[in-house]
Amino acid sequence: MSSSLEGKLLVSKPEFHDPNFDGTITLLLEHNEAGALGIILNRASDLSVDEPFPGWSGLAADPPVIFAGGPVERDGLIALGRSMVDGALPLGIHSVDLDEQPELLRGEGIEDVRIFAGYAGWGSGQLEGELATGAWWVTDAELDDVFFAEPRQLWPHVMRRSGGELEWFAHFPSDASLN
Image (cartoon, rainbow, N blue to C red; front, side, top):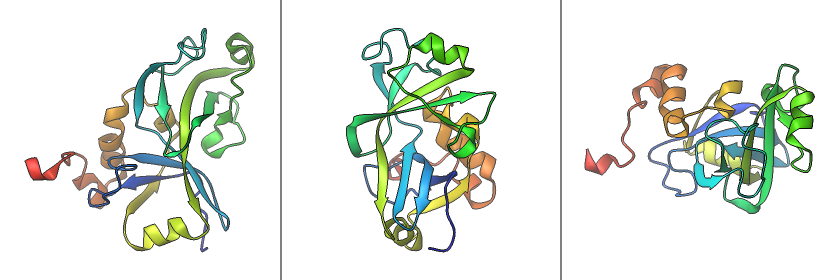
């Protein structure tokens, strides 16, 4: 492995025909010789945070719903938080324990929480193989990407911000055959 992409965004290319990743923006939380782990940032569900976690919607970033973090272990949850003090994860993100009381977290400085069901995972060398075949664009991530209020607009937002070839695809239709 040449260098870690931890903290970078993987942007699915339109010609990458995997329904698990069509039109996705994935933040890599880990990337090393053993593999990679990421969270899809732009797949909001219809499930309100308050349904499984009463009292959490006040701390949940807009929209206050559970996000589909990826195709692996969809029954498992990963909660990420933002505060004025950097956390241990890329971009200064905090790992949030959903067994805590939301008001205690707010007292500790956590301002926003986003909850993901599942994650995206790659075994050793698997992501590198996908990158070699051109399945992904890699671009810089920003903390606000994790808590972006309009998940359907994150893909074009990241594309415009990234410039170059990626900017050309900011308005790419979800189904080019209808164009």
